[in-house]
Length: 265
Image (cartoon, rainbow, N blue to C red; front, side):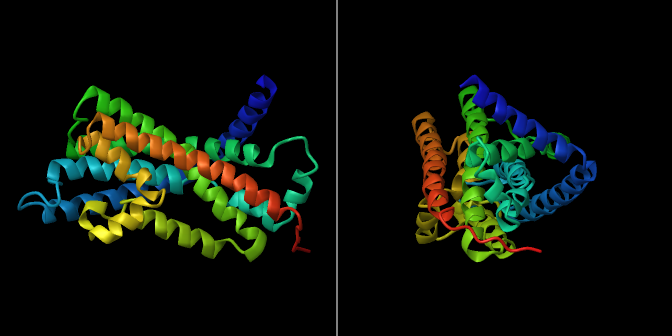
C-alpha cells in the first residue's frame, strides 16, 4: 500500500514540477482570471445596487464571485491535454504494459497539476480581498465545511475530466469534447450566474448533474444558504459523485482498451 502511494506521490510531484517550469502560465492565469473577476464584480455591483436578487445582495455576491474564481482557476488550470495525448498518440498502449494503474497515475498527475494553480489562487484571492472586502463565512463550521467542499473539487474535477478524455478512444479528437465540457461546467456550476437566478426546471436539471458542486455548493455553505445538515448533505452528494465517476470511468476504460487504434506517423 505504501509503495502504491509513493508512486502516486511521484506522479503528482512530476506533474507539479512540470507546470512550475512554465511560470508565465501563472501570470496569464492571474491576469485572465483576475480580469474576469473584476469585470464580474463591476457587473454585479451595478445589478445589485438596488437591493438583493434571489437571495443575493452585493455583500454575498462579492464572496460568491471570489469562490467562483477559486474553483474556475483550479479546474480550468489543470493539465487535461496531457492525459488526452496519451490516448491520441498511442502511449496508452505502452502504459498498459507497465505495472502501474493507468487511472491512478493520471489522477495523481492531474491533481499535481491542479496544485500548481495554488499561487494564482492565493494572489488572486488576496487582491480581491483587499479590493472588495468580502464577508467572511457565516460561522466557523461553515468555513470548515466550505474548505472540505473545495478539497472535494480535486477528485470531482478529475472524474469529469477523465471521463471526457476517455471519449478520445472513439472520437480520435479532444478539442471539441473539451469545449463542450467547459461550457457545461461553466454554466451548470453557477460560475457564470448563480443557479438561483435560473428557472426552477433548469435548476432541477443542474442539480441532477455533478456541476453545481464546483461553485454553488461551496458558496451556499459559505454564505449560510443551507444549515449544517444541508451542508453535510451537499458534501455527501459531492463525494458520491466523485466516487461514482471514479468507478464508472474504470468500467468505461476496461471496455475502451479492448481495441486500441493508434493514429500517427
